[in-house]
Amino acid sequence: MAIEDSPHYAAAQGRCHYCRHPIPRGHASFDHVVPLVKGGLNVTANRVIACRPCNRYKSDRTLDEFLATPWLAARRSVPPRRWRNRGHYPRPRK
Ligand SMILES: [Zn+2]
Image 1 (cartoon, helix red, strand yellow):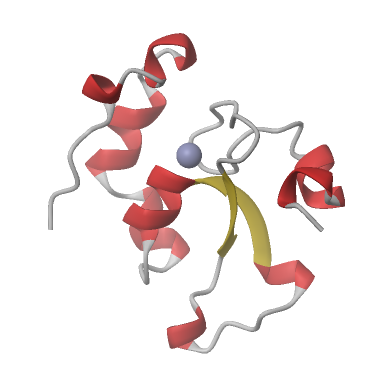
Image 2 (cartoon, helix red, strand yellow):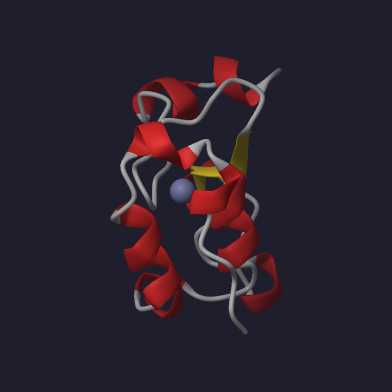
């Protein structure tokens, strides 16, 4: 089943759980709130809909670590309509 057809996606109204930007069909992904590498379980309660940039940047950060990143704050401040323009993706900083 495509992610876009899942109850998760409908419940999230097609928006990223983290940055709240609308996610175009075909670009949604599941993120594990508690990363699998940190003991998170691959269960519904531990999965949220996330856009790919958020998912990629969150990587194996914990939720608290991710919410505290300047990257996410910058991303949330970008108007969704301009978000598709690649130039507005904040560059991940390690
Ligand atoms: Zn996002």
